[in-house]
Image 1 (cartoon, rainbow, N blue to C red):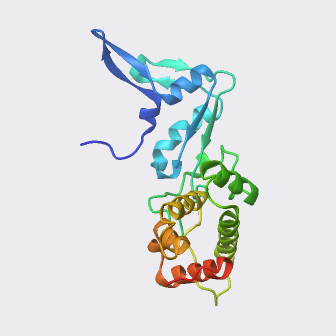
Image 2: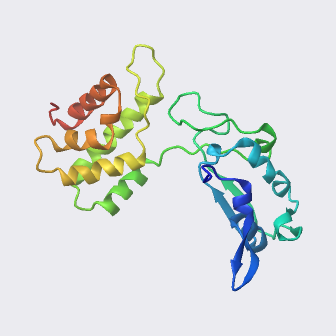
Length: 224
């Protein structure tokens, strides 16, 4: 049965037949240790927490021992480091937005510096839009950025009377909205038409309507 989750053994390496011999092939962790490189583990909270404690020794500056390669001991070369990214900061997902995210082992988390990375600045997202879609009119770009700022502000608020907008308006969604707006520029309401396909078709109806009302107020383009 094929594996469905990444294991530390996959990062260490594996034995394989090569030229008539059975040789050990370094995995990304072993290679990074040997070369003094950074290793990035993306969406690390989708891994099994019990698996990740196998990294504790190397995170403390100790060696990696590889039983499958005759017990070879690999010490971290100068410059080695491990970066992990996740949507949950190691505490699991209480929102239900990131299903599959697991609470990480406290001993593992104690070996990391934890950083919270927010959205890019408006200027950075404007530069991204200009670089990828230079044909997008400047006015439309400014409208989109204003819409995104407003929606993110509402998503961060906790006022009980507000409609909950709990799906993040990511930079990825913004770029997709811009792309689809250009594709559907002949539609009666291209900004709304594109935004439905970029984001709001997967929201609750009340949240989607609230977002389209924001678009209408900022851009003047009627919805529906």
